[in-house]
Image (cartoon, rainbow, N blue to C red; front, side, top):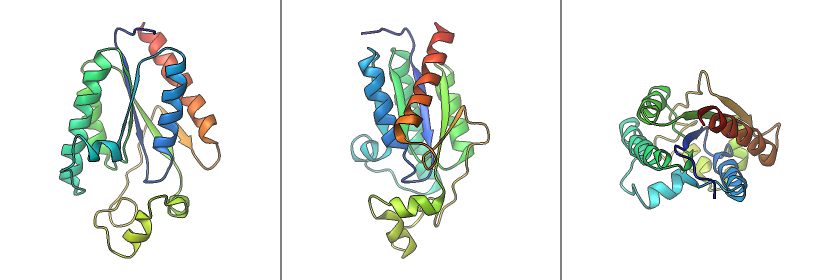
Length: 182
């Protein structure tokens, strides 16, 4: 096991069904096989376990993501590489998350890109169909905006590249950040 004095928080943001969690899980498996301590904090899991009362209005999302940022910071300051997979649609909230995390550990913002039409086509949970019928309020990309990052450390295009190719790019970036701070 490789013990890092300080880990890093990697924040994967993008539309629902863009591929964030798929990439995060591949990266986590590969980094663990290299001996690193890694945690994946995924939106669905966090909403089911840690934050089941979280809603989807702008303010509820902000509060929810602030909680996640503090958990991620705590893990990373203890040598864990933390992969956070959250839609996190608002630039100002992502900026606040960065500020929380960077007080102690490096923060890497990654934009997982897929066009809205592709995400609607994928729709693994049927949420876009429900949102398009008006059954889900505040659904990012349909009835709520998604504000793409202006200067992400990395853009992963999940239409042009496979999940494995994107994971490889992200692993290279994470290892570079870890090497720089060592």
